Length: 238
Ligand code: FPP
Image (cartoon, rainbow, N blue to C red; front, side, top):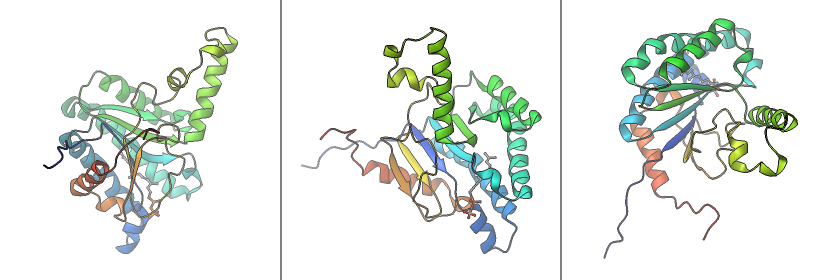
């Protein structure tokens, strides 16, 4: 008799959107054209993810290391994010998405910080996809910021050292309260996690694909979920 299996959709998917530059180069286009197409794909994939049953989606849009890119590329990426945040303030009431930004936003231009805060506030009660955008995000930086906050609370007597557990520490993270990703996808053939959610990905399944991010679509997302279904997650058990 065939073994009964149920198809599992990961509750939380994290994505490293890599390959925008190579996608543009192949078409003799400036790198920025790859980022523009990449941001369109990011928007579409939110809709696809929700339709496939995914509840949380977290994407790596700009890392703490990305500031060393040429000035005009950094500027273009910031302008894309600026436009995304502004447009989403209205759009979030239609698509019912809850948008949160993770990372240290204090280094971003003030108007961008303001758009982020407005978008987070207006979308906070939405009940559709929970979409996290990582901007000026570095996993080690997030852990250090969380540890610093925890140390301040301990110094002020709000928490005792013996009360510090993994669960309690996690509440200090940018993603505190959000379940850990079940599946991490990285496009463009690189097999690294590049400082993306190092704490949160401890037990996640990893899916690496050669597809460049601007070519990623619902079919490719479905393939990643199929791969996830063929994995047996044991969380350290047997
Ligand atoms: C990696 O490709 C991609 C990035 C560093 C930026 C990702 C950002 C976006 C897709 C746009 C912003 C998103 C939203 C939601 C508006 P790469 O440039 O490193 O590509 P390469 O490795 O081929 O050079």
